Image 1 (spheres, rainbow, N blue to C red):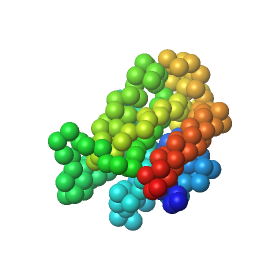
Image 2 (image 1 turned 180 degrees about the vertical axis):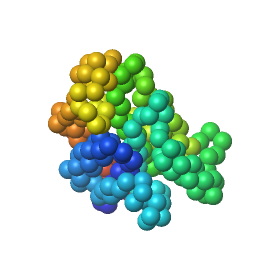
Image 3 (image 1 turned 180 degrees about the horizontal axis):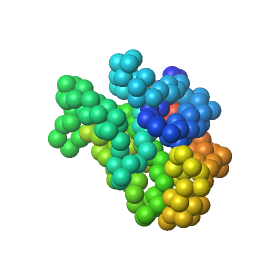
Image 4 (image 1 turned 90 degrees about the vertical axis):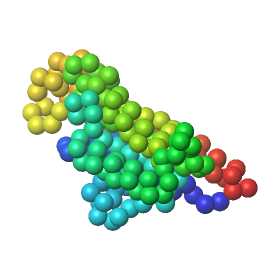
Length: 193
């Protein structure tokens, strides 16, 4: 049977989201998936078409309860390419064997995870409009960059987040990705006969 093809696509200013993307890619590869790991800039330069992949994993940090401008621009371009192919359709019908996961890194000094979910919701809806079946929205704590003793890293809603994402956080992502790849490969194999 053909292996699951996966695209792990991310934007990362300070490295937190990139580290999560790398852990996700390791987990998928560990379960036998064929993985392409690219930043948004690399994907844009290559003229990448997400439709070439069974699974698309799209990651971003949460900035002020949303996604940063480069991610928003990429998502808008994805939507334009989708409209050229006839998406979104009424009811955004899911396409068979076309899955997606979104992943968001966040510091959440004021209200914790609630600061990140709007960014995740935005990415989920963008991919659903392209007919992708959403298989998860994964959120990972990441410290603010610069001075590690910055007040937001020590005293926010989540407590001390210096050094995050840490090895435990990344191990959880890698493990979840292995489990996801196992399930999706099983679904592909069953469909292929």
